[in-house]
Image (cartoon, rainbow, N blue to C red; front, side, top):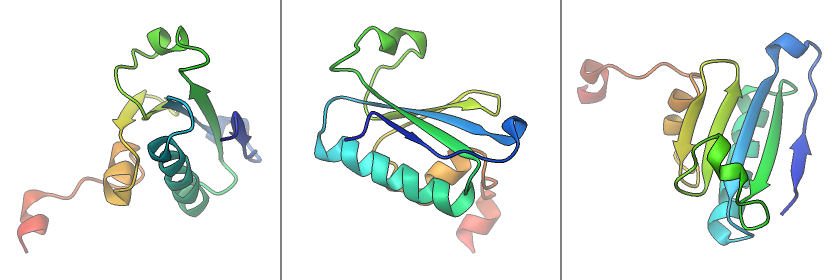
Amino acid sequence: MKALSTVRKTSPSDEWILRLYVAGQSARSAAALRNLEAICEQHLAGRYRIEVIDLLKNPQLARGDQIVAVPTLVRHLPPPMKKIIGDLSNEERVLVGLDLRPRRRQSEVRS
């Protein structure tokens, strides 16, 4: 698993900074990174930076973002900070969690 994956964009103010906290190179951690990269390429192409933080190597880094489970995705920019726990396989949930797609109203779900 790579330690840092970076994609630059043209305007620093539009950059999304995402931290993915993982525990080693487990299948779940690898799946979370693959899913996140795919979502970012499709919805944030050229406007994001992913920082992968392995808590087996740097456990003290969990305290700063109050990480209690892994994998956990933390959106630092744009504000507000958001957290999503899991392998990020539910694209709709990730998009809503990152505010890239509005949450569906109950009436839309029942239709």
